[in-house]
Image (tube, rainbow, N blue to C red; front, side, top):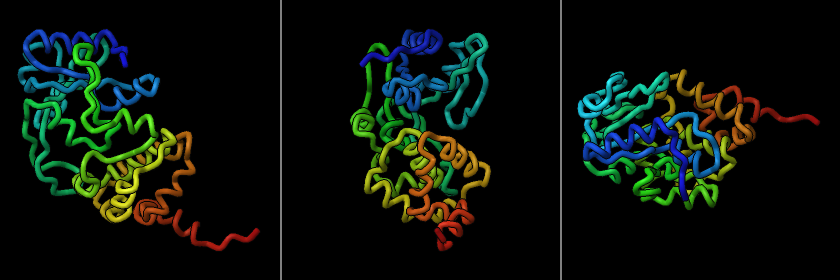
Amino acid sequence: MVIQIPEKVNKIIHLLQEHGYDAYAVGGCVRDSLLGRTPADWDITTSAKPMEVKALFKRTVDTGLQHGTVTVLMGKEGFEVTTYRIDGEYEDSRHPKEVIFTGKLEEDLKRRDFTINAMAYNDKDGLVDVFGGEDDLRHQVIRCVGNPVERFTEDALRIMRGVRFSAQLGFSIEASTKQAAGELADTLKKISAERIHTELVKLLVSPHPQYLKTAWELGITKVVLPEFDAMMETPQIN
């Protein structure tokens, strides 16, 4: 499978490679490309450390140096370039206490939420798919990377993201991922109302807004949209 990477993204990847670093397009842009969709944005992951990235490009923005992210400006566009990293312990069900930079792409992919978002690509190596994301795309399945309880405990918002992705793509949620989402739905109380609102809106304007019922079945709406639960519990008179 050949992915058509935009010229500006390839320039960033190739410059990093020319200086001895690994670099790939990663995440949602790879997923959307494999689905035949036009990615909204392109993210790059690299073995280069943030200061090494900054040294190679004339125009950069320190987007989140502590998390390894530098935005590289190419013309009027910005592209996030993030160092391979391992996330440390999560203390607030949202952010890691620390991040550890690593030289291994697989370690970086391992920390991501779902298999369909844990793929990387460049023209040299082609698709790097350690966790079966392409197969899950083919079978239209949302599946956590590794242990779903661990993934949702690290970041409770992933519970909402899982249902939202299923609604946007029309995919089913894999059994153990779905079970863990239901068991940990109450931890969404730790997530800010703004982030919950963003995910809810994306779900409701998706091609399959009826998947809100999945959120109800898993006990998610009880936490984030109690009015919907009250409506579902009201006897319907025909």
